[in-house]
Length: 210
Image (cartoon, rainbow, N blue to C red; front, side, top):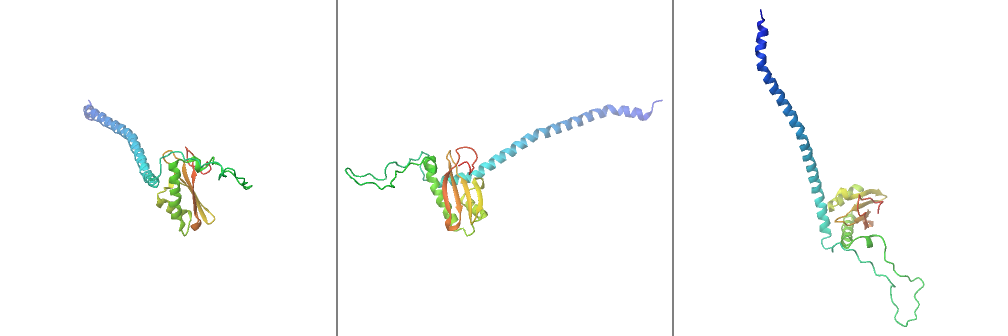
């Protein structure tokens, strides 16, 4: 005699099989969907990071354009004239002093390595930074950074900010549109000094490489 319980289970099993297969298929689809969403999420994250970087550099670029607004195009600067400081009139027998010398055109430094636009903009950067730091009562690295940030110089372009005695030294990477302009500064109240300098043409900014 057959067991009624076994017969009942056998009768139900054909109906349970399709349900089990359907649940397994749904689980597989869900796992596959999760796997395909991750690259999209990573791509969206990279896009947001790139967009944020572009937004952060926009104010800095705008400041550079504003400072150099009245400067000439990026043509090479003319070298200073060479030759005697003065020419004696014809027939003159005057003997030049023994310590007389002919000025020599520079072969390195901002005078010959910066284009006209950078040279012009460099003088304006020198002036605006010096004026902003001149009356700084406590020229610590933190205070100097705050002043530079307020002028539009972002942290990514501030280098070598350090205390040196009573002064705070710093450098600014102002390279733009293929230029090589940079600025070296020493904030020390009314002894503040800011000078333009020449940065590497390519690659990261380094004080040692100049």
